[in-house]
Image 1 (tube, rainbow, N blue to C red):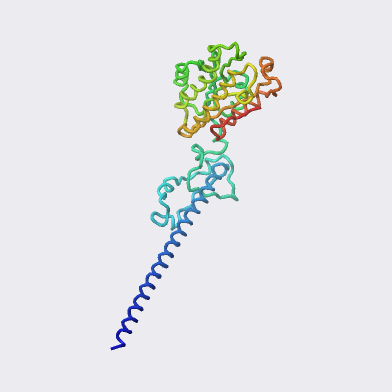
Image 2: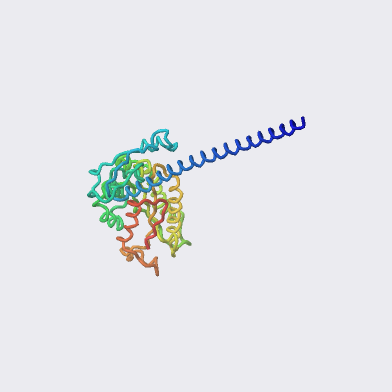
Length: 330
């Protein structure tokens, strides 16, 4: 009879050990399943990262590329991520005959998503930067003429001036700006190389004189941006004109310093809100070499810059990818 309690204790101990063993086994099995699943997810993610790198390279390299067939682990409900439907919908074959460059026999790229640039799908790098319809206000001025010379061969220029150009408009009148865009229609870029300022001693300056810069160069260009944004294509751009006196104040230049600094603030603020991938920048040039006879006395000790070099800032804004930037051409 004394053996029964000992046997009972042994059975209880054995059962406890079995429960512990079962628990450890289930925990180990759970850990194995967890790490196996994590491994599959990591492989899927690395596979996707590789495709992203390759498709971005393909978007900017002028070479043909093709789509790989789906692997077994990429089939629906076969270990793919929750974004599988998105990636499936984006699988689009790019035919080599739509790419300008000759085939690269030693290079095969795989694409699992459309290229990063919205309009680059099926287009060469050269085509992605060309054939824009650009509304240019002030195209007949000094910088405007240099800019037209540099980009007219690869873009369509719609010139606007007060009395000259394809269209005429008064940027101090929002009604005139709206009527301008109604006539011109949709464009890919808006460039403003215009605006009046008042230079004079602050002690003698009147509010009406100060409003010259506010109404023309500041609000005129702001109006072009505010109204023009609704006539831009997706991924379009707006380029305004500031000036170096926002950073380097000069005598008799209080109006210019105020206006140029305000334009920079507007561009930075607008850049974070513009929809549809629309970009906005401002070019801030020093005094032009071509204008030294008229304005040189206002800029003592400041090196003048040729208009042809200033025009490069506008090219950078129109054909580049940056937004909210101030391009200081000094």
